[in-house]
Length: 212
Image (cartoon, rainbow, N blue to C red; front, side, top):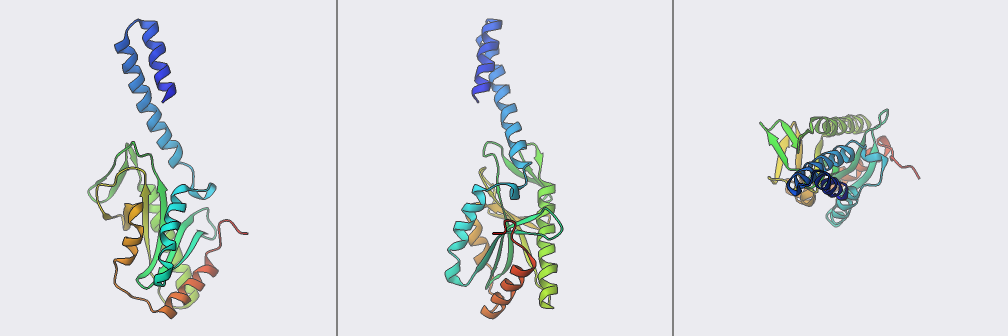
């Protein structure tokens, strides 16, 4: 923003027109916003500590008293992909990817199939989240010898989300503040023994992204 203001001032002085200076400053600010959004979202989450992941982790910790178990930052073997949070509990198994997006750019959906953040189509991110959950499901199912479904999701922090929970390309998308409600609103489907069994299997087949 300082660069944008500077560009406007310099331009205004050189052209002796404050109106031109203001226009240039606004255009520079818009360009800066778009650039920052592109830069932030292009860095894979596993390469850095994520504030969004920490916020989700704090929410999920409160579910422990209700019988939920969580694995954080788990890698998909043979790839650079990561499930930020794998949650196993009475209502099922969930893969939650935490996203911090630029709050200045609006989030919208088109035909329930396309997710946009400002001008950027987030289809690749949805496809990645769906693939990660599918891989986790396959690996856990093979380890246990029975089918285990992992539900994919994107928990978005930053911009306002104009819906509560929306399924887009088979991925549930919602505001990060709704993580706990998204998980607990479903009917109970797993016993305590099943939760523990699935949790232990997931811990074996999905290695930590940051091994100690």
